[in-house]
Image (cartoon, rainbow, N blue to C red):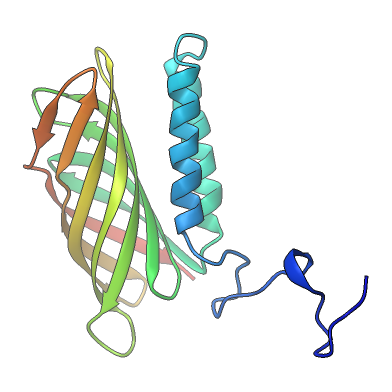
Length: 192
């Protein structure tokens, strides 16, 4: 294969690196991948048990999150309480929430992958506001699916971080319900 004048290979044979050093050019591909994964779940709903779906989604999101330059884990307390795994790069984050949803109409175990766009309040990037879309998988008496939005702020001091957010959700598979009461506080530990 011939190299260009600048010494690089042409086209898709060359992998570009972002400023953070990872090979992903943006987490939008992760979110698109999760969306395709959901479509496969719907298509194969009768043949796959619910736990296989959950494990496949969780492992895919975990591997995707580890591709970010920095990540953290924490406990979330609020309308939907559980565990939060969050990966950060320069201006985006991917968060995976898993736990229990306490909304009486769609209560049960939930998994929510969220894509978040960060806006830093300071030069160090330790105080951020964020907003973004996500998916909502709820495993209760029935399987529920919907979309979520999230808005909030997070603050980091050393290796400890806190986050306050609001995550309204619209459930539209097996139930039609809008849940707007899902506000939460998250305490997290950053891995260096």
